Amino acid sequence: MAYNCLKAPLQAAYAKSGDQVAKAYPTWVNYATAPYQSATHGDRYANNYANAVAKSYGKYEESGKMPVGAVLAKDSFMAHPNGKVSPGPLFIMQKMAAGFNKPSGDWRYSMIMPNGSTLGVTNGKGSANVAFCIECHASMEDQDHMFFLPEEVRH
Image 1 (cartoon, rainbow, N blue to C red):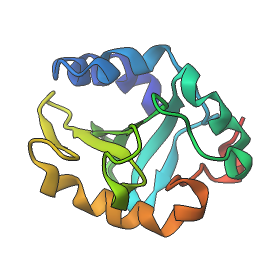
Image 2: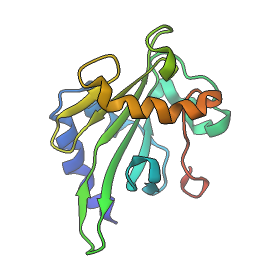
Image 3: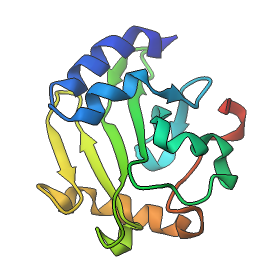
C-alpha cells in the first residue's frame, strides 16, 4: 500500500515544521481503515487522526461539538497515473476558545507542506492561505464545521 511506504518520511517532514501537532499526530487514533480520496483536499488520498480530547470524532455525525483542545489532523499524498506517489500537506483543525474566530466555529486551521514549511495558520502568519478551509467547513456548521470520512473507510 502506497501510504505504508510514505508514512514515516511524511511524518518526519511535517515534524520539521516545529509544530507540536505535526510531531504528535502519528501517535493518535487514525479513524480511516485505509487512505481515501478527498476531493476537497485536491483529490489527495488522506487519513483522519484525532487526539484524545477529540475522541468523540469516532461517533462521526453524532460526535457533537468538540471541546477546546480537540485536534484533528489529516495527512495526505497524491497517487499519480504512472504509479508513483508523492507527499501532500498535513491539514490541521484545532478547537480554540470561544471568540477565537467566529466564522471558523473557533477552529484554528493550519496547513503544513511536505517540506515542513507552514503555508498558513488561522489568525496567524499566512492566514489568507487557509481562508478557503474556513469557507468550505462553514457549510458543515451544524456538525461543528467537521466533515467525516466516507462510511466505507470508517472504523
